[in-house]
Length: 294
Image 1 (tube, rainbow, N blue to C red):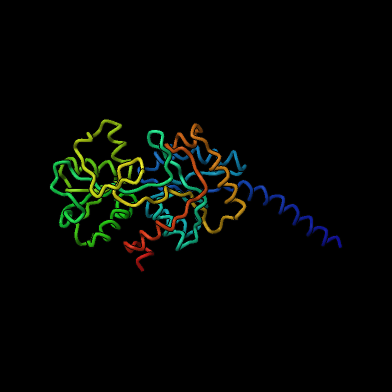
Image 2: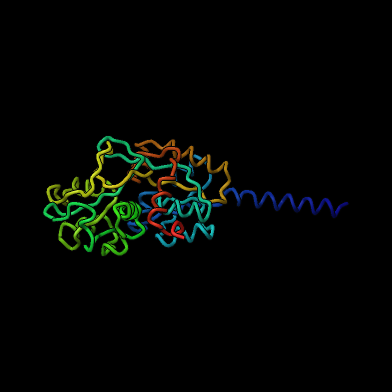
């Protein structure tokens, strides 16, 4: 009897010791650091602090590369993930990541929960259509950049082209570099995420009279663009995250206002409940990207 009491007492002590450690375990948000780790931390640390205060569990930001984000998701090294919509769609298919919120951006008072791609040439370029780009050097930030390439790749495919053979793709690492390369005639054309040109125009880095948009769409979206509209970056919850915690994080993200440090530092308006990312899957299926090309 005494032995049983001793064992039960020991179990109670162990549970009391383990429970606080479990409660205090850091919840890790993997963020795509496509402009460097230091910048990602500056932009997203306030979001982790907001979630920590709202939920009562410690959240931390882990800046990760294009290559690391899916690997760390697969290995369960992170609990939440914020990457581009193409990365999310692939991780949803492969690892069960679920979108729990969508970013809201803003341009000159217009709130946007969608994004697009913009195909640019110099104003004096002979290129007038996507077909005219055949055989030309074409700039993009990266082959796996959703706004910078994959959306545009779909436009080319649907125009009857084979982008992997018909254009000479140059990866230039950033959208700014693509725009400069077009201006300096280093490439004949290029594509960037919507808003990239407007940002550089607002900063006085380039002039509007230097560029033309190919395949321009006029659908009420406030930014120059050449592709369909797709949902903005999501926050995803990894498959092992309990439903209750997902709901808490969604509620806390949606509560972020435009004047909160979490929004200001990330240069967004805030978050909303997750949009439907089926259009992203459709795009990736058309271009046979990653897991959608198998």
